[in-house]
Amino acid sequence: MTSASSNPLLSDRDVDFQLYEVLDAASLCALPAFSEHSKETFELLLGNVRRFAREVLFPTYRLMDSEPPAFRDGRVHAHPLMRRLYPRMVELGLLTATRPPEVGGQRLPLTVASVASAYLMAANLSAYGYVGLTIGAAHLLEAFGTPWLREHFMTRLYQGEWTGTMALTEPQAGSSLADVKTRATPMPDGSYRITGSKIFISGADQDFTENVVHLTLARIDGALPGTRGISLFAVPTRRPEGNRLVDNDVQVAGVIHKIGWKGLPSCVLNYGEAGDCRGWLVGPENRGLACMFQMMNEARIMVGLNGVSTAAVAYHESLDYARSRPQGRPASAKDVTQPQTAIIEHADVRRMLLRQKAIVEGGLSLLIAASQQADLAAHAPDEEARRRAQLLLDLLTPVAKTFPAEKGYEANALALQVHGGYGYSSEYLPEAWLRDQKLNSIHEGTTGIQGLDLLGRKVMAAGGEALRLFTEEVATTVARARRAQVEESWCAAMEQALGQATELTMSLGAMGMAGEVEQMLRHSADFMELFSIIAVAWRWLAQAAAAREGLARGGEGRDFYEGKVCAAQYWFAVEVPRVPHLVQLCRSCEDSYTRMQPGWF
Image (cartoon, rainbow, N blue to C red; front, side):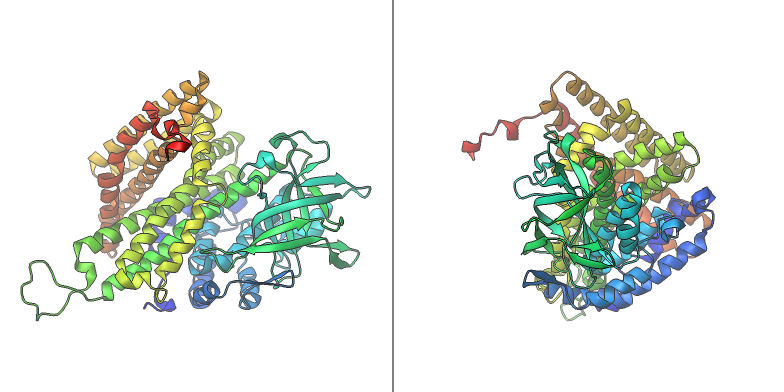
């Protein structure tokens, strides 16, 4: 069994390659917002996080997976390790890494902070979950909160004294936020009395900080039905009164028992059972969903990183196992007295490892590219550049959330398969990571919702401008690949696949404009699949170009660069040829599953 210290979680060489050779993250320092930073400050953060993730956090993963939080006497008791882990994660500076100095931040690029976070996710994603949720809640208060909320809530969240959550889902509504029923009644002091219930609220209670702030969707009395009548509130478990905290009538009604992410409790919350739950409005009345989408979109990038990280740690575990596990001999070997060979010498094991590599490193490249667009959307020097980056970020977000979750699950299953019978055993870690990975396709908007969002909104955004801008990005990458003498057939395949997707999008858009919305969206899952293949092909073409440039320079690292080129070859040989079939499915509006009647099953 691989020890905690021998698994790198993520490959440092790959991270450095993605940041500095594929993307040139150091060029972000030319933006005024990041002018005080350099590659050296980036490396300082990454170095500190890598050490902590490998030496401190990863050894706690198995313990927290096997001993989930306990629900006793109406309170959630987290694993005792969290009492020392959370302060240590706060000390790393990730809670405020991307935030401005005015709120105690370092204003680092999200591009770098995302990669740093990925090491912690790979080490123990449940422990990191408290950090990620708290960042999102605090950022919402920073963006939309009143000065009083920022002083009394946001500051404590950023300082690590409290944790935060996002409380959207209700038992009767599920993903349908239009059906939210939690009520908010105005009070004379400017607060609101909150009544209602929420379910599947991650990190909603714990005992290692003194308070939890729930960013909660609710309806003010008399508000319109549907999403237009939803407002956003900050509802603490304990509310400030003078210099003390008092109970705020937020009760945990139960804890959901999960197959994975066992270190992070998922709770049922009841607000106002005693009629004394207070919340404070965040942002304008009836604009809660618009405000919450800031946190949700950030969370979708975080979920994508969870997916990549969970697949990455399992990939490295299976790679180490394949190199060290002797079994069998080459097919051509006749002498059974000869020593067994390591299973990495078997072609089918290399097939499984290469597919994992293609998914993990392609997915990470996509998340880094999306994070770069988030940095540009917030900090580019002119309004047009910021608008351009925002459109690209909006387009990439559902893909960057979905691809690592769906294909990451496949990668995790392959990691287990490489371990053979041992993979099926809880004595080895791949089965735990496989359990963890499944959640990523469900939370922060299921895969089905992401497909509807991509096809129904994002590729059609601004009259198709988002897709046009993506086409420009791909064209720049293709030009770089050709200069680097990347295989021409890959460049041509990239252009052809994107052209087919663009024509399909125009056709489906016309269908929607004609009122045939159901037919347009019928194969949104297939559209997500084909667009994901294209987006990751774009990133593999960029990696192949950087690898060819590295090979042309000569010197050390030839094996690393050759591995990149080989993984790109795999993606263009195995995945990109699937695009025409998926395009035809979407264009034909094939109706087998919509025609299938409930009674026919």
